[in-house]
Length: 256
Image (cartoon, rainbow, N blue to C red):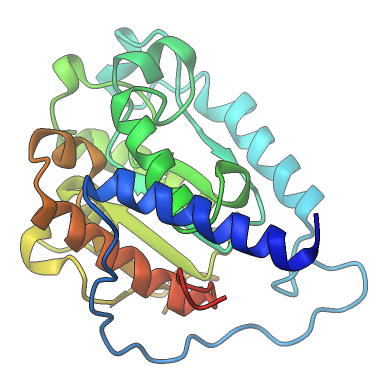
C-alpha cells in the first residue's frame, strides 16, 4: 500500500472512531484559541526527550515505585479491601497523561487502569485522537478501589497524591488530561466543578519540580459519558480532545 493510501486509511479509521464516540456522523467541533506550549531544549546525547531521564530510566523508576512502594502501601484504609493496587500504564515517556479518580471493580480485579466499560470508552477517545494506549500514560489519583466506587475521601487522596505527583514528575508530560471532578479538583487544588472547568486550559500550580506550569485540560470522565450519553456531552469531550491534539501538534481529521 502506498504512503498516500496508508494516510487515507488512517484518517478514515480515525473518523470512524470519532463517529463511534459521538454516536453520530462526524462534524468537527469548534476549536478554542490555544497558545503555544513551550517544549524543552534539545536533550544531551543519551538523555530523554525532556533533557532528563531516558525512556528506559523512566520505566525503571516507575516500576520501582510500583513494586516496592505502592503494592505494599498501607497509608489509608483502602488497603484492607483491595484485591490489587492499580498503578498506571503504559508509555513511561508519554507527552500525554490521562488521570482519573480511582480503580473500579474490573481494575481492582486485574490491577490495570481503565479496563471496564469506562476504559473501553477511553480507548475510543484515544483512538479518535489517532493514538493508542501505547502512546499515552493512564493512571488514577488513588491506587486502590474505594468501596462501591464512591469518590475518594480527602485522607485517601492525601495518602496517594505523592505517588501521582512522582509518577507525573518521572513521565514529564507536555499535557495532562484530568477526567472528572475528583481528578481535576485534587490535581489543581480547586473546588470548582468540572462542568465549569472543562474545556479551559489550566496550569499545574505550585513549586513542584518538573511539573510547575504543565498544561492541564479538564474534561468529563468516561463514566459520566456512559451515564449521560448525549451528543452534547460527547461533543464537549471531543472539543476538549481537539484542543489537546492541537497543543501536541496532532493533525485533526481532514487536515492530513
